Length: 297
Image 1: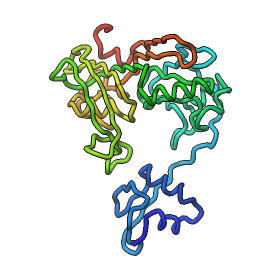
Image 2 (image 1 turned 90 degrees about the vertical axis):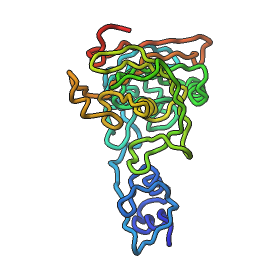
Image 3 (image 1 turned 45 degrees about the vertical axis):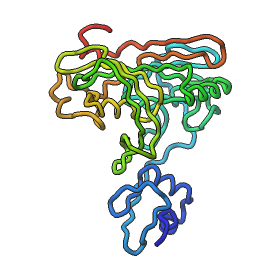
Image 4 (image 1 turned 60 degrees about the horizontal axis):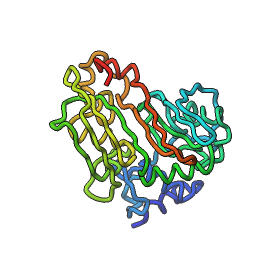
């Protein structure tokens, strides 16, 4: 028997062991047709079949791009952006250009050396198809303080709006689970009993809509990847247009058919990371979501 990462290093000697381990962790390696997640997995090199998918390379340093930004607020230390649906936050395999980071580097080039070089100034993220508010640091002090605030989840309130299939049985509730990558599909996340990260979503039924839909307000205490999408799906109220956790057959019965997941980062409230004052921002509900809502909330 041999460790998977050792066998990968033998097969791909031009690559580093850490790079190969990263591919395993990111879900790009299969053994006998199954995605594996441990680089130290014991395998039989003469029997087991190993498959490796190599994602497209991402530029080491994102380049500035002249992309329009919807700026909600900006000062010396921070910038708050109303991100449109469809924009990726930072470069990643398959999305090397056209991201929010590329646009920010053109607007505020001083952020280039803040934090990770692939995502300078970024302290939290939104899914590509999620619209709404995101805050970015412009100075080192703001970056450090925002990172601490988001890590501790103190003094920050993030509220999302989601249009969902179905109706909750209660008017409000709290979902507290562990989330981890799906054991088979590494692009998905799932609720697990152990070895996951704590995820907490407080939800409220904001409005009953036509066609059996609901407008649900979600206030999150943690910021796990796909958290709201997984939690709402677990209560049988999947977000309409969500191609990963939703109900495509039900989506196709709607008019209009949703072109993206109807999830919007609606409200952001926090203490300024440098100055002693409270900030609160609200992003208008996008037109595509308003098409399912008969009146403003």
